[in-house]
Length: 64
Image 1 (tube, helix red, strand yellow):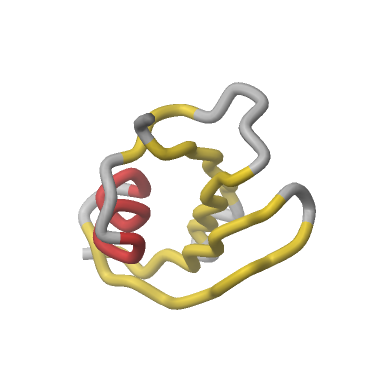
Image 2 (cartoon, helix red, strand yellow; image 1 turned 90 degrees about the vertical axis):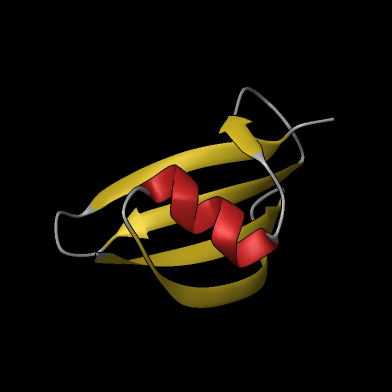
């Protein structure tokens, strides 16, 4: 499994941050927050997941 940095965001402000081992970025977001996620559009509350090994940033939002 890979390590991802998962940050819950409120706009551009980091509300929480943790490192998670998971097979995919979306799984890391779900594992860290305990909620299902989908690709972010323009939501104010969202989740930023960074694959530090590859330098890739993923953006997710919570299902309503």
